[in-house]
Length: 466
Image 1 (tube, helix red, strand yellow):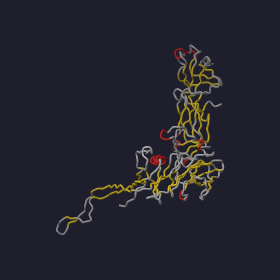
Image 2 (cartoon, one colour):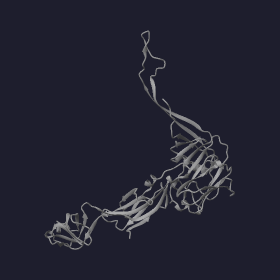
Image 3 (cartoon, rainbow, N blue to C red):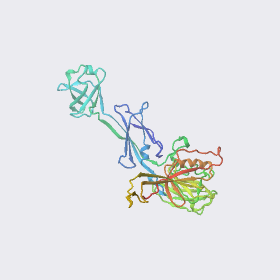
Image 4 (cartoon, rainbow, N blue to C red):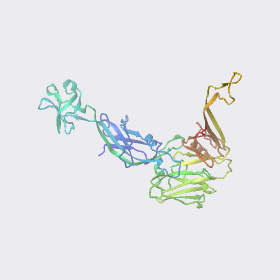
């Protein structure tokens, strides 16, 4: 029977960027040299990827380990439609322990046949030649000085062993003692308990700016109606007024969902009156893991609509979109990785300003002139003194949004803090970074008309010859 008890564990499906903490207890946590051992394997594999040894926590004696940093290194993003199992990882975790191997003898010491000290203990485990260390109870050093300390086992049988200490030096044979190996070797159990098929994805869950609350794994696990996609879009499965955000014609969204092998999924478009639009339905048969479903307003719904992703396992994902038909000066947009791993976009329909920053490395070189016919030193008109060694240019774009409601104002700060952003100018898509170190989240109660601007820097500099 396992001596390890699982006190707390994360949900089956967890965001990799949230705490993923396991807490266990063990009946032997007061043993000398005790450590809890947490060992992580890929699901269904015997190849160890990480192992942590932790001391018992003061006060409780529990073993605690947060493996979120490890899980973050095992998931990544992919800006594409279809299967995205790069953002997903399954693992098994074993709970074990170790402690310094020892026995505590309570039987009285006896004399061996050769005049040495014999210690009686059933199934002690020592073999001939073992180097051991004995620590006696109170009074042992004074009463039996030669028994204390390092010794060699010179004889063994199943229930006793003899050490190289003379019996005639023992004055109190009733004093107990603890026997350990001289090299402090450990007794180790790695798989006292195990949890299998745990999952993480490339996401971070929070309840707003306070980042509190446990992750509701069941709602995102893709087995029920309704189910939630792995996205930070709020209030799905309700109504367009509760989850209105701008979806601009020509730009896409990737809704990442937990899907299952052998399940057929159908994506359909409906207007807010629940009438099926002429788009689709689109069928998908993914493998087990995560899948990016494409929401494509370029298919011209020309009205507020919602998408419904229905699996024949009883799951149903539904998200509402508000169609934006305002006249746009520019067709610029930023695609960004949202908190939970899906891809959203933000349109910048007003004026765009492009700027560049130039850096040069220069040095003043020697000018080779010549002596003219009048015995005068001169140089050619195209001679170069200050020479440019290296020229670099980095482009920045200032993008401006149209007027927005409170929901999109809240969504804008997620764009500013996203680690992965792509700029789309209506034709090409290029990686970029957000040039912002702070932001103000406008509130409609303070400012009725809200619009924002952002400066981006393209991730690749323009090459310049030289």
